[in-house]
Structure formats: structure tokens, C-alpha cells
Amino acid sequence: MKLCKKSKARNFYEWESYYFASGKKRNGLIKRMTPEKQDVVRKYSIHEKEAENIKSVLSYKERNVNFEYGRKLEDIFEMGEFLYDEATKRGKKFVSINDYVNFIYISVIDVPWMGFAREINAISTLHERFKWLRFQRAKDSEDMEFAIDYKIFRADKLLGAIQIKSEKELKHGRKGKKYPSPNVKRAKEKSKVYSDKKNVPVLFVYAEEHGKIVNKSVIQQIYNLCA
Image (cartoon, rainbow, N blue to C red; front, side):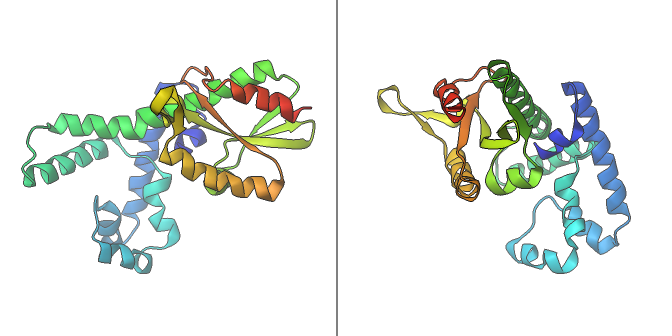
């Protein structure tokens, strides 16, 4: 979702266009590399021993080409064909090339946009209710290190932080109880570091894509921060 946030797209079509344009930039950067480096960057899968040697072959900036940029549509089709070939080698012939292409497209374009839209809409919902508070987007580095999406301020005072997750991250348990997914548990471990460092709570907001907040108790928790 990092690339999606960077795009500042106002709608899905702007995001899709940005993603493909970013993929074109990626290919341009790869062409400037030596043939040996190009082979490494363009590989869809690598063996464990190869992974250990990547740092000696590619610089940090060169390694990040695959993480900081999107892909062209042609690249997505190539990845789909690669997955199809790998599957057929293993005797799995019940999934078509188009199925793999659609899977990749959904994973790299649809899913990030849905997450981005969820964040924007959930914060809009909170801002409507708490107009006297300021919800400031966290830096990418803060999101990576502490798993926080927004920081809550009253004037210039930091009250806490927020991590926004899909309502699907809550797993149904026995007797109707809901439990956080492993993904959420990992995020909470990171956010605890931020809480300890700043002496403020990190609240987890579970929301639908349109911004409806599922865990209503978090509303009261935010009110409590203002007390």
C-alpha cells in the first residue's frame, strides 16, 4: 500500500495509471544496470543461496527497484505465465493463465487500493465525529517500524496513534467472540514499541472499505483520550 499512498490518486483509475507508469520507470532503471544485475532483478523466484548473495551483487537502491515501483501490464502477464508454467510442471493444470494474471492484478492493484480507500474513509468518519482533533498521517518509516497509520493530536499535543485494519482481520471464535488475526498480532507487537516510546496508546480501528467502523468501542477510547 506504500506505493498507493505515494500516488496521491483521487480514484481507482488514477491509481491504476500511476502503478503502470511506475512500472515503466522501473524498467527504465533496470535497463541502466549491467546484464548480470538485470538477470537478478528480473527473476521471479530465487534459491536460498542466491538470496544470500544478492547483497553482494546489488546495491540497496538497486534491490529496492522491485519494492519501490509498480509493474507494466505486460510484466503482470509475464508473471502470470511464469506462475502457470511452474504450476503445470507440478501437475497442476486446473488453473488457467488468465486466472494467474487476474490473481496478480488483484494482489498488486485492487487490494492496495481497497486498503488505501479504507484508511481514507475511516479517518473521514472519525474526523466527522471528532472535529476538534487532528488526525495526521504517519510517515512511511513510522508505519513500517511501529505499524501506525495516523497520529492523533489535540492542538499540538500527541494523544495517541491509530492503526486501521480490515474488518476481515477479526477472526470469529467460539460463542461469537472475535479474535485478531496473526497479522494484527504482529502489528500490535510493533505498535507497543511506539506506545512505550511516546507514552501514548495505539488504537486499532477495524473498518469496512466505505469507512464504517466495526469495533464501536474504539470511539469511546478516543473520547477517553480527550478527558
